[in-house]
Image (cartoon, rainbow, N blue to C red; front, side, top):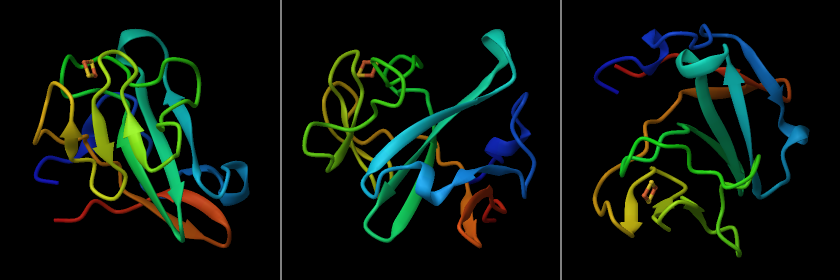
Length: 126
Ligand code: FES
């Protein structure tokens, strides 16, 4: 993460509690917004296996949101992140586009950590 995503307008500070792990299905996703209007910081959390990943809700193809309705970020079998607009598919683990109109592009990660069952904004890796 060369430039901190957490420097964007309305991005939550490190340590901000997002939700509890149990608020997301064992394999599932949920979207969150901080702020209002065009400057809002919109991102989503994917829970998969034993891990969680966070990404800004901007598709690298057009910059629009990925979800076609709230919290719908995954394909049918919940193995990949799906952009509803033109069908791009992204690996959950690293946000890399593996199919669709933006191959090789990546979702922008949001650092997260789990502490005592809560999902918090984590430190940005250098
Ligand atoms: S906007 Fe996401 S695939 Fe086109």
